[in-house]
Each structure stands twice: as C-alpha cells, then as structure tokens.
Image (cartoon, rainbow, N blue to C red; front, side, top):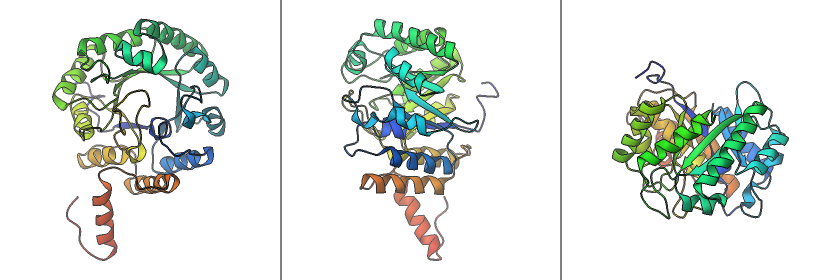
Length: 315
C-alpha cells in the first residue's frame, strides 16, 4: 500500500443537498438549501454535491439547481459539484460556472434505461462526449458507477463488470470514479473483494465510495473500504437520500455516523462533530421532522450528562 493510501486523513463529500433531498416529500427552498450548506461548511466539510441539472418535472426538488450554483462562489477551500445526465445537462452546468460535474452510469442496462433513458453502451458514448467537453472547459469530472453491489432490477452485479466500466471511464478522461452501492445491497465480504480488486487495478487515488444504509451495513462497508486503502467517501447529512428511479434505495450513509466512526478509529476528517450535529438539527427544523444518523441518541445523551455534571462512559 502506498504512503498516500496509508494516510490517516479521509476526505468526505456531503451529497445531502442533491442525493439527500431529491426524493424528499417536502419542498426545500433555495434559501434553506444555502443555510444547510453554510452549516456544513461551518462543520468543516469542504466538498458538496449541491444539485442536479435534470428536468424539473422528473425531480422537482432539483428545479433550482441553476439558481443554487449562481448563489455559491468558487474558492480554494470549497468545491461544489452538480450532477448532469447528458450533454444538455452539461451545457446548463457550464452556463452557471459549475467547476465540477458528476455523471451517473449504472452497472446494468435496466437501471440505465430507468434512470437516464438509454442502455449502457449509449450511456458510455454520452459520458465520453460530456467528459471531453468538460475537460476542454477545464471542468473536473466525476463518474459514478451506480448499483455496483446490486441492481434493483437485475440483481447481482459481477465485480468484473464494475471494474471494466471503471477502467473505461478513467480511460475516457474522468478525474475520479465513484463506486456507488445505490440500493445498499452490498455486504462487507463481497464489497471488500470488489474494492481490493479496484485498488489493485487502478490505485486508490481516483476512486470514491458512495454507500446507502438500507440494511444497516453502510458503516461496515465504509470500514471495509478504508481497510482496502480507499480514503474518499460520499455521505449525506442526517442520512437523507435515495434514488427516485431505483426501488429500494433508501437513505445514504449519514455523514455524522461516518465521521464518528472514523474519528474513533484514529482517522482525521477535518470535521467538527458538534457543529455537524448542529447541521443535522437545522435539517430537521427545515424538514419539520426528526432526522439523523444512528449516533445521535448516544451523542445527545452524552452531551446531556456532561451538561448536568455527570461523567459519561468513555467514547
């Protein structure tokens, strides 16, 4: 394992404003989205997926993505990413100055048809066209390989197919490839083999892991990925999320859960846990309901005990 891969620093991209909100029943205003973004920045997060350039009639929560990008300012400390399904989406992203885009390519034909309206072969062609246009414009490109651990329509996905798609996207010029367990179908044993094979084939520097906590295995898969040398993850504030076009895709791995696990295992993230919980509370107030990861009851009881002069159990 290289020195870079053995680093104790883990980079986290919060996808709550896009993947977290896209299928929520409550409409969230642009102002509230910006407030959530500022709370996440105060917590120390530096990269965010904040919207998708898709048809508003298909994903109404993303109808203000152009406006949202117009409200944020690129700087050296923070990076904002927008999802684009095709060249039309890329043109919208370029028009508002998006410095980083994300393409989604599913590992199966059926999910590609349901999600972006084309089979895998055509989706690869479109991805190649968008990557070329983005690189010419100096835009950073992430490509997702969705349903990498299982498809809601076709079932198990062969690891070799995921490796092949990853290699093709990197060869076409993607700056990074995100391996996404879109419906939370993975288990640590199989996912570990997949992650190890990807690191062996392509190294870990250009790979990102995106996990859903459908079966309460999100943290287990994240730890497995860390053990194979991967150091870049997506997660969503308060565990919000799910793809409207992938049945069974429940919430993402909660950012607050991922950060707590990493910190307690001796890794650094640059994120302040107290400020992150404040961001969770803000999301709950905006949505008008209780939200949050699995660590919150423990965290709140610990803080209450400290406030009342008690001595909590060791962290």
